[in-house]
Image (cartoon, rainbow over all chains, first blue to last red; front, side):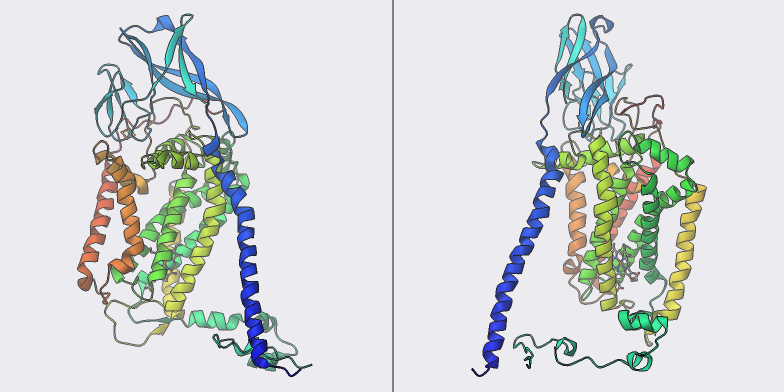
Length: 164
Length: 396
Ligand code: HEM
Ligand code: FES
């Protein structure tokens, strides 16, 4: 059969097109093989469920009405592969209504607020946020009151509930 | 059997070498040295580097190009310094919450030349941010981002983001108080974004709180993803700079372009001596410090970011309640979008600053805003800014 150059060239072009598509599909597959597992791996912290635990803070009789105390406590947390004893700070406040546990993380951007005993208020060192001694906003940029954690008094001890 | 050559109809640009049955003609070097080439020629026959080196040394510099065009080269050198010192630091550094602080302490006080190597890396990051800003500003004022260099500019903006990413992730690695608290606050910025904020926070931190997983996450970004990306985009940047050549002064000056070598190369070298000299001076004169180990308890530490994020930090102070997202996302986001879109925002044909007053004014306003806020941040370091208590052994 005589050679037809035109037909040869056409055949080559359609082979190019077809195989090009196949190679494209293979490449997509390759990207998926490495990309999908890595994406799940990297975003896995989003799946982590937190659970609530009660932690003992201090004896109930060591805080008088009107007082605010900074209390350090530690709890076991799972941080990646290791379980660690992690330390936290919470402000415990007592008034006529009972005790409350106020989180020291400023609701603006998370700097730790300090309690000024003489002025009965919390101040944030970062952008000047100020809170009343019950954690409600007084002035400055923080958008919300300081977070309160559930507390209970049991067996003469004050307990706080935290998420781990 | 004779093979037919393929002649595509639509794409007739296959170069002669590609054709199967037409051997490439031997080059001059091949003809002369084909039997016993010198080592250099032997290499050139395989690499073809003579042409490459020649081309780059002969790169035409329009008249008026001078000291301002040396900053890019300085940046490149500083980045190589970061690669080398970073590689060395990684040999002694341990990316874990238990080991990081101790390993950085070891590097700083015990490893041979450790203070200096760490000093080069720490100060290098600061100098790079300054030089990047200068380089970017010179390109901005010269209007060099205009056609055909839009892509060069865009790739440059990406490089700038990557450099800030390096600073942010690197800052946490020593795992001391300063590092820890700057990261607690810095990552919270993500949480101010409506709807997806909390998800982003968890993704960045690797969990709800800054902890061991944040450290390994930042480490991985700092030594794997960011360097690899930077290598690719910086290579692309250089390719584009060469392809489109340096733009001359905004008002073309009389005279013929001169080759890059020797005059411009020599200026580059002088600037390298000054820039690297400054870096060495800082590394020796102000050796890097290390504060107490990160401690999530306690309320008496005032977090402060690295100085080049101070502008943002001050902006947050003056934002009224409920508008923090304006400072954390909207203003920085608009500035970033503006930078990417600059070649299209500025539609004037001329690169002359007088012919694009609007853009120049906007640029000045942004520079002034960042400058003033940074200055304010530098000036009012809170008086109660105390060092962390050193007695607490947290995160064990
Ligand atoms: C890793 C960081 C960088 C390196 C190593 C680098 C390197 C260079 C070099 C060597 C040049 C030629 C000489 C000069 O004009 O200084 C250049 C030009 C240029 N750079 Fe960069 N650069 C970097 C970052 C940036 C950034 C952040 C931008 C802008 C956002 C940028 C935009 C440009 C543009 C548009 C030019 C062309 C200037 C002209 O033609 O006059 N570069 N760069
Ligand atoms: S973090 Fe407290 S005011 Fe900004």
